[in-house]
Image 1 (tube, one colour):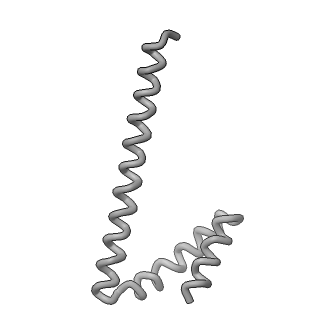
Image 2: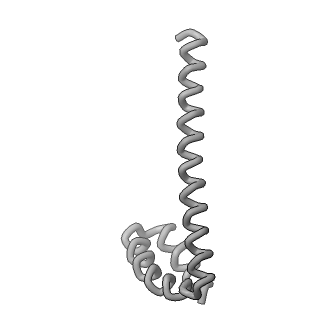
Image 3: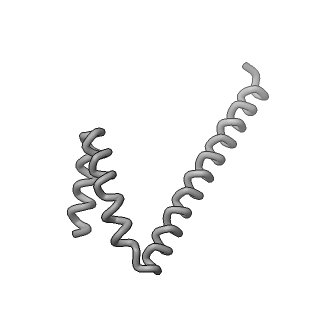
Length: 78
């Protein structure tokens, strides 16, 4: 491989990383905005009550560290 092809591959990988990072950032910002709206309208506690059993079940299925983290977060929220 010559230097130009290595640079092209590095450029493609950098672009791919930037796109994936941008999508993740947008999803996180969207979830944060939804949480703020729910809090503003006083429905955040109800949303937690609905989502908590789903998260527990998914964490139980995955087991291990995921289950431990979800259980710890839920326990500290109470």
